[in-house]
Length: 229
Image 1 (spheres, rainbow, N blue to C red):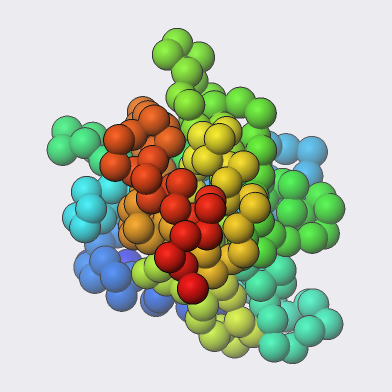
Image 2: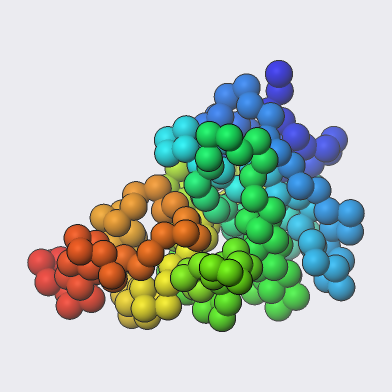
């Protein structure tokens, strides 16, 4: 059983497949392919989003294909592939869930549309206020309405035939958490998230870390810069 989902003559795609496939050997991911790749008047401009089943923790691991150069080298910077990033997301997976939630694919495609239309990528430490629940829920609505972008702790950065690609994980956060993270430097953002949840899991159903008896102490410590030197 092959875990390579790339079409022919797509060396950048194959490089991503090999990297993610090494984490999930022998697994064939769920793949959501776009009917109109790179067309910005549609809702799915990325060629594909693949979703892998992970056991540590039990979760779905989403990976985008298309913000780096999948097929041929067209950008002027030889050391960077396309925008130099691909987006990832990790969400909880129930034991009885045979398919990953589609909202994760929609979120990645929406943010990719933003990048492609403005010709400007995200970077580590960027925060995003979505202004709405991350999963599009309404009743009950998820408290997570923001995102912080951090290097995926499992995939990080790779070299491809078209240049380097950094896997940026989208981490869903609540409004107050977003304000705290937005005020921190990247190193402290990474450290805070690692203390709270080193897998950067985005659970739309979770309550705020700030309202949690133990997690709130961690957030407050980073907010005040206590004991971090």
